[in-house]
Length: 234
Ligand code: CA
Image (cartoon, rainbow, N blue to C red):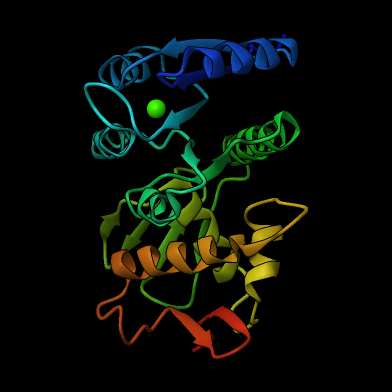
């Protein structure tokens, strides 16, 4: 039998935690709850949840610091930031420190469930893929789809899951240009897009900072102005 997926909720507003717990459990997920950042981080480290729903403004340690600490541990658990509508800047900051996604409060349960499912599906697809191989990108970047490691000239590059998926997707179709909407649908698995395409730009920028010698003059992930992004076909 498949093990129940567990979701860690880190949120200091008790009514939001209650609603989330109720709805997630009804959908068959196991839940863990923390009402402050420190406890959230400790629970994430001890219990290894399948996904974390992370509020930003939290007692003791804010959500960004929790996410940053997990990424520094090398933990690539999907992190979905819960942000208030007036905290627009938080979305970008959240993605820059390695969160996978964000959802704006107040959110509908339907939207939240869709995001949770999309993020968990990505994880299981990634880990369920048993076809062992190394992807030849035609460059000095090597993608090992067995270990999900990317190396450049023999050096391992630490990528978040989303960065890894974006890179793998683009590199498997060298030279083909994808619009941000294409990428949202194919890499993020969203069947809808709004102004969320900004997420793609932020992820591309972070990826470039990690893989490119000069992120301002990229050699791997290139921009086709006004159209989208593509992996070099050189
Ligand atoms: Ca809060």
